[in-house]
Length: 236
Image 1 (tube, helix red, strand yellow):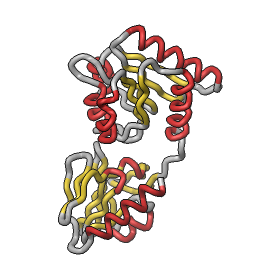
Image 2 (image 1 turned 45 degrees about the vertical axis):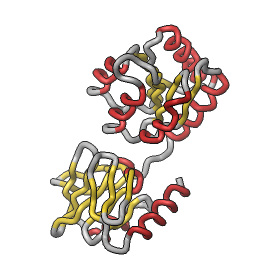
Image 3 (image 1 turned 135 degrees about the vertical axis):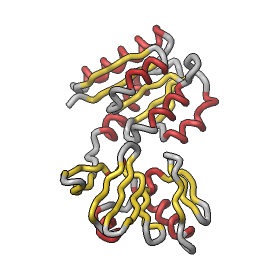
């Protein structure tokens, strides 16, 4: 299966330069790739609404009305797995990259050696085996990737599993679900299981997720979930 790569830059010269180096990297490494190019964030988003299954995104930061940072934020609402690499002539935006889990920043002019190093890392991460949950829901057998799950909520004899785009109703207990998941998940209170992958803020009483959802945190769990978060981040 080809590695799917996007290069988005409103400067035609830079666009062709980066794309050429990507193709050279793929050819020398005998890596099957599919490369798409876009000259604006808006044109990419228009295409992205129909096809969001990209592995690596090389995004210029300084682009027209919609810059690369804001583009990446919109991408993250539908794709938490893509490896995002920002390309910029200024270091001022680097801190904002943490909000969208950017893999790296490349400063212009981009050297081929540095781009190759970053592409190798992005390729390795993209092709890692993705663990998944196999469940039966509404008379269907469904595969739900762990990194797509934001949280799950107990409802009677069922668990409601929430991803960014879908909700699945599965006959299962909280304990039964946790047995099937990895250490990237944490039980908060009696009814919720939250993915630590998508937690962006924790207070004494609430957990805030990347998709703007907040979940109640049980009394006395604040220190415990912070320890679980630290342990998880050290393991990845």
